[in-house]
Image 1: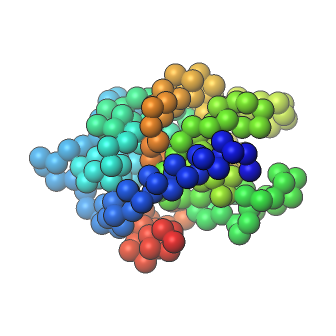
Image 2: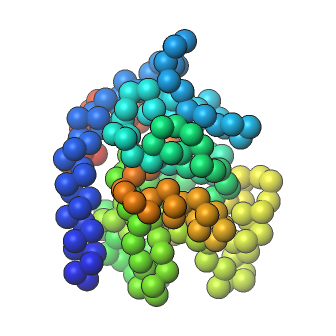
Length: 229
């Protein structure tokens, strides 16, 4: 691990200590729709699922994002929403996600070479993650979501023409957006103009919604406690 990566992980750990109490509150976040008078996220004219709206509204009203910018990834709809810390929408876009359906990462997945990752292991894990900008081995900017599982949000990679990643992003259906090894791909322009500025001056929070269980079941008190260990 490089010195820069080590320092980045220390910074993330410090932020994690500050947000841990907010993390445990997530179990109650998705159990009730926001009531009249509570703060709600501004989706503007973007279409969003009830799960995405409900989670984003709670994040804002409860302060679970602890004053940081935040992202909602709706895996079922293959769509990313990026918000200012105060709930104003920065932007929304289609996203490519892991090939396999699932909400957990295979044990040790972050230590495997890509060639060793089986198709059924190529999931995008659900959860609440403290995220920060960094550089990959080629110097390109990425947003680390789950460092241990080697999951990041980054500009779409189009080097393998057979995968048709750019075309998948441009299609109107989310059904063909499963192609990655688990990372979240967005267009290069969206990453440059929306994601990078959102996280340029601070870390942030990425909420990846589950796809195999209801949101409120996934973020039950017992599961949240296990994820926080």
